[in-house]
Image (cartoon, rainbow, N blue to C red; front, side):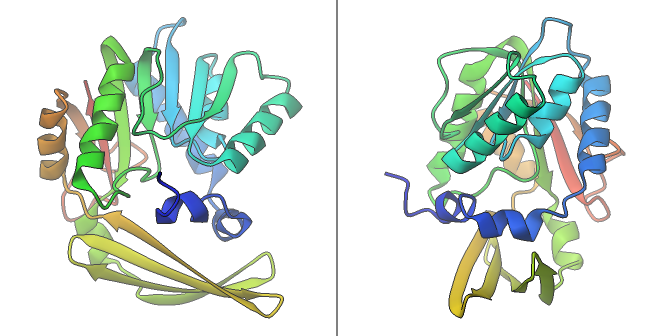
Length: 246
C-alpha cells in the first residue's frame, strides 16, 4: 500500500546509511541525556521510539535504564537494531519491530519520542493527523510525547543549495531547494557505473502548523525548545523545534 513513498525505499537502502553514517553519536547521547533530565521518566517508564532507524536513540535510552520499544518502517533498519542489541547483550528490555507510524501498536507507553525529523514525509495531509492519532492512542493517560523537527526558517536561511560529499568511497551530489511548502533534497551518485537518484521531501512545518495538527488529534503543545541543548526557541535563530506534547 505505501511502497511507492520515497522514504520506504530510501531509508531501506544501504546508501542512505553510507551518506548519514557521520551523524554524531555523542550528540545523540547528549540529547537523550538532556531529554531524560527534562521529562524525568519514572523507573518503570516505558518508552516508544517512533521511526527509530537503526536504533541509536533507543539503545541510548536503554543505557539510562528504561524499557524501550523502537519501531521503524524499514525491515533492514529493524534487523540491524536487533543485531546491535543482541551484540550488546541488552535485547531483553529493548524491543524492535517493523511498524508504519501511521498505524498504532495495540499498547500504551508512558513516553513517545519521534526524533531527528522523522515526521512530515507524507503527501496526503491526512497522514500527519493519522500519525498523531496513532501517537495519542499509544500514549498512556498523562503520557508525554516529544517531536524533534527541523526549524523551517533556520533551514531555509542556512540552505546549502549544492554540495558534494564523499562517504564510503562514494561521491554523493546533493541539491536542495524549497518547493512550495516542501524542502526537497536530490541525492545522486554512481556505484559500479550505475547511476542512482533518490529524493527526500520534508514538509516545512512551523510551530503554528504543529499546534493546529495537535488540535486535530486532541493533543496539545506543552513546551518548546530550539536546539539539542534544550535552549529557548527562537523562530529565526533556532536550528530545531523540540516539541513536547500531551
